[in-house]
Length: 360
Image 1 (cartoon, rainbow, N blue to C red):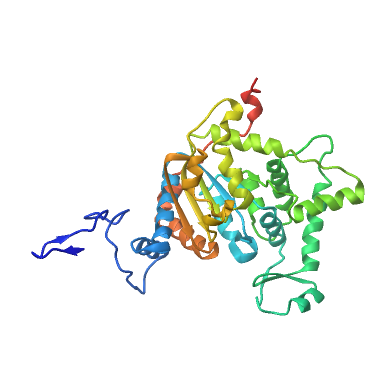
Image 2: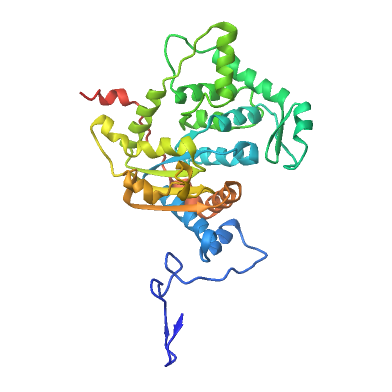
């Protein structure tokens, strides 16, 4: 507050007089021995910097749930090896998300863990040559033995050999069928099994860039069976999902291919001779910066120039490591937005673009 010579207090430009929302007064963070996750995130949202952005992200996600929005989740980074699989399963089972676009790596680690093979904590400064000799692979401070990795890969290979050769599969079909095949033998509920059970489509635009691609390749070399993927069908399905939604919302964990795949479906309606205003809500959790020109650091403001984000969209970029931010946000939503979650009716998902007719 500014204090005038006469003793009168005046708020600085841009500050609200009352309230705790955008532009409200900053409230120093109080410590309590009984604060819940929702309390913690709300109090963080009343402070500044990325703590404030974390609170804003939680509020925007709550808005997605209360609105008639179809929620797309872009999942990049080693989230499953880092322990986030049950969190993503919660999002699926409680329909805090409706469509997933993921790296193939996360979807392979999901198979690996669902089969009962654990990841272990390791030393990021450990002896990597010793790990190589022991056939143990490292993801920063996470370890996994190669022999168990190979068993998970073999499961994927044998599954791929059950598929038909006379037609291509979209990645949505492939992962739905894989989730169904995995369910009877899974030791724990995973992303693929939960998505297959609850009707949440999963797309993987870079399937070949993962153990899933290697598994299918091994099956072809061993048997000669040519399993084909319809990646353009994926593009058309994603675009049709976006076009037929009343509103769309996006949540990006990291960036990379999943992020752009979701971004582009917000503007690709011209393929069907139609257009929509772009995504209506956006949350991005990233450590990447925009000034290097990479997609992972691209801001929502930049995406507006491509018309991928609606001019009146609610969005926030949270610059934080996702394994810190996601548990806080989702725990706060599970508590503070439980009524909205319970009342939410999942949107009807229409990926059947063929029914829309071919544009002449």
